[in-house]
Amino acid sequence: MTTTRHHHTRTTRLRAAAAVTAAVATLTTGCATDAKDDKAAAPSPSASASPSASSTPSADPLEADKTDVRTAYDRYWGVLTEAYAKADSSGTALKDVASGSAYAQNESDLASLRKADQIITGRAQHSNTVVELKDGQKLKTASITDCVDVTQWKPVDKTTGKEVALPPQRLLRYLTTLTAEKWPSGWVVIEEKIQDQAC
Image (cartoon, rainbow, N blue to C red; front, side, top):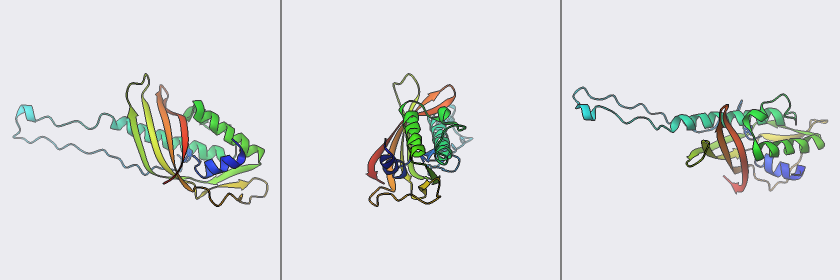
């Protein structure tokens, strides 16, 4: 990915990742999703209820996993924010929060930033984050859809400290979709796709 595409993508979309990315992105550390905690307290059974009606429906058994995915996604963006702020993943937990094409793409983007002597400052913001768990997978798998706002996540010339001018037509709020897997160490983002769609 070229530096120009990086900016159209990562700054238009990045993914500084909140990202974290934490998403980057963002992130995590500083980028919280707008997903609300859907935990609802189940009403206590009535004293007059019969034994067969005394048990109440349990909370969504998938909610705990969804909450864990959101937490991992915030951490992902937090790590991205840290890495992009210095154009280098060394000393960060990128290998812990990303793998597969998501890891490879971030490393490629970071290399492009270093080559251009640029860093990304600020934080991406996130809204309308939706987590869906997938069935039929050997590992627990989750799909994450998010609206990423990179208005305050900006490329800066590392030497001069000046903001890098970007194409005016770039998207500042764009839709991104990610796939995460639950590993023994926790949820890990394995793929991230930036959609050319405003949100």
